[in-house]
Length: 301
Image (tube, rainbow, N blue to C red; front, side, top):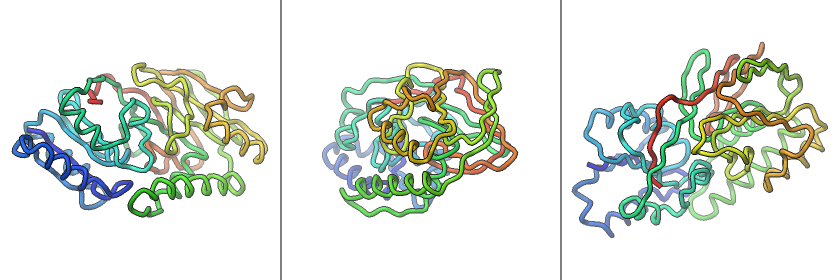
């Protein structure tokens, strides 16, 4: 049995169309596929929990990075069932990071013909009130503040959705640079404590991209088991704007105000509540601990 979790409104609102077209082209698979469509935010979590008790050969997730994160955080049999992710979101940083084509129909055909399997240790973020698996990055500062605003937006259907997403992201980023506030926190990297005052950004990555294609952690690799920490220390706002423009070319790590660390575990502490982002989803916490899972998750690509 092939179980599907499909978010029909993610990104370009094309999930339902892609699934229907694929099944029309492959009528031999229709009786083996059970399609579950999400109907509200958080529904993918509930569906993943239910599917965990059923016999599943492959779990196919059609949607954006947020849909995948919901599934991974509720699918109990994650160690034994391979997951095929079909990207139909606006950011698609996970697909970009592990080399999945961003053409949904082509990826579906590959899953059922000549896909390869990769084993990856997911990231795990723990706060004082939650434990969250993630696939790309977590952090505080500019990326979290921008994600918090972006998540309140609604994007149009069709090909213009991607352009609108990028436009809103960059506009929001500019506003945060001009009007946003720096953060004061303590960063513990594998037991070594670093006090960070007036820092703009702390991002912990397991894949290179965030924000819909910005290469924040060029050294991050799905096949490795470490964390890549990127920090931006106190810097003039206008110099910061110039620094962020280098993200498009992954040249920011050469700058003096940018520091990169490799670690197996990271802890962030703050006296004030911090807005965090994890795979683009946001929340608030004073204490955050991040590591990698012990076991591997299998993805088809």
